[in-house]
Image (cartoon, rainbow, N blue to C red; front, side, top):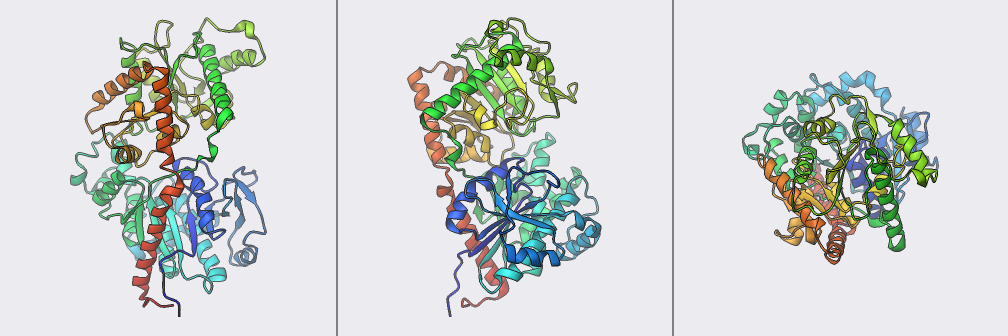
Length: 565
């Protein structure tokens, strides 16, 4: 008789972002996959939505030999799945499932969810149905694989779901396959994000908020209820930072026994001569586009400062970044020209035809047209927008009367598209643009973790962030408070009410960094890269192993296992 251990034998993970590149969760899963494969070779199965009917998904390599004995049985059970490998380092097993057939039984499923946990789905809207039908389909996949392949082979099987979008499945797994230990990871609570996104003070009043009451006020009752009840019922509830852990405790009324900080792999960072070549190419392209747009010349001593992320104008601090750039226009201590880039996907239309025409001449070798000395109309944006009149970034730039005039020592360019290499203007991926920056700024108000600053320092680009981001709190905990931009990362204290002070700190930090001698800049870049290496998955995977142990121990308790197999 073998003694029970709390070491995971087999892992399932489900997320809407498996083979579906949308945001930070994709980065969490895809960068961790290689480390997971090293621990549990092909005993990790990721489950994602099959959204690519009739089209090729470049992130998914279909292989009908993967899980072949199960696939035939799954078809007989009515599951429509495709199996293969995720096209990322480690190439883990992936099951993409078609969730559309389950829409017709959603009312039945919501009724069962009410009976299981009292989750009220009656006032749901938006993506609630779509997410839950995928979550249910993912749970069916897990149940089927477990019953057909694993039940008699592995004792310690874990199912981890990410975000409220996969909660329903976790509840159904715990009911129908109680032998599987369940983990729910929230990367940002629905109600916390809603409070912050509706311009309400989150942090000073966090202790006083009632999560369910606020969910009703902000019309997110169904998502909040689903998230809250799942957090209370799974075997292990987790989140990504201590700042979000506190949020969960106050708004979901449950503590996280384990915090799972987001790591990364350095495989995508060029090395040696390739790094210098990629950086030089990025800077040239940025300067070419800026010249074609504004009619101004940008020398290589121009300080490229950028912000990026989801288009959450207040939560991501885009507003305070623009405020800081506006104040920098009149900063007498700013000794270098600044080119500020706002890389935030908006409701984008087509690449600007007039800008493409100018760039075609440059790309065609028409050096006689460089540099342009006359700017285009509206020289602040690279693409057309469907909602130009109501867009927040362009609206704030117009309010500040920032039109990239020749005399302005700070020029701001809005890049409102996904940088996937197919944007029609830059023709480069996000990472191949990031490497060209001198400084990155992420002055977030609501940021459970913050992959953008971590990615920035991985590319040797020092960054400014805030004390309200999980990454900022982690950076201070590693280095100690008091370190600044010369040490690779500046963490600016941020509260509900110090917007103006944060803008001034960014303004001053940009000027100070721009005045550093080359040797000090190089030290800052090396310090940034060194800090990023502390966040490699090989250093953070231990937190996941702890979560598996906690979940399996709790599974043993509720199943009444005696400690022997």
